[in-house]
Amino acid sequence: MKFKYSCLSRRRFLSWLGGGWLVTLLASLIYPLFKAVIPPYREPDEVALPLSEVTELPPNSIKFFSWGIKPGILKRNEDGYLVAFVGVCTHLDCNVQYLADQKRFFCACHDGWYDENGQNIAGPPPKPLRRLFLYEENDKLLIRREEKK
Image (cartoon, rainbow, N blue to C red; front, side, top):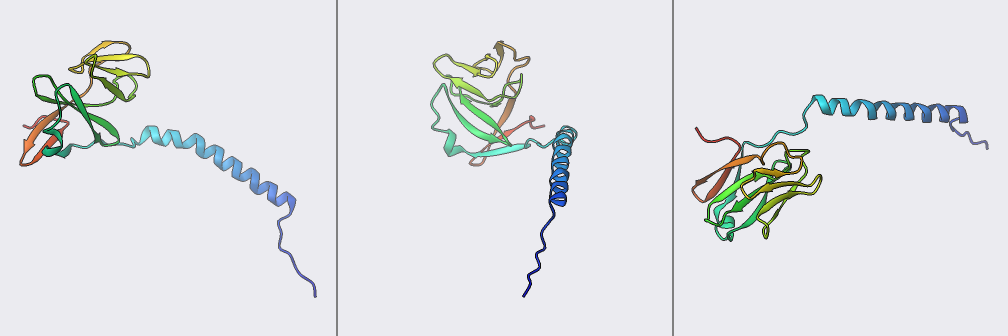
């Protein structure tokens, strides 16, 4: 009995391999163009946090929360008031840290500094941290990107 094999010839295999390489190359060149034209992210209009999570926040401390795909920072000032910021540097969108002992925000990417109120004070950041607006409703703390009208 004879067996019939259905194998690809070497030439056909190399043609498929070359074609696959070409398609991969074109896709890797075209994909960034699509990402530049179509924004991949839309930030939320509002985020709700339970008030029970923030009432025990000590003065001069922070709590991180999700602001879409970026971090948000909720900070309790020394006077007890809460403020919220988008937790990314205004220079190149790197995440910022809060240094409680210095009462400043720090961006490690390019040595950017902000004071405790989010104002840029050193380094390359061109603008202050983006401030978010806080509202209490029932048992929730609402964090919005625009002030209520």
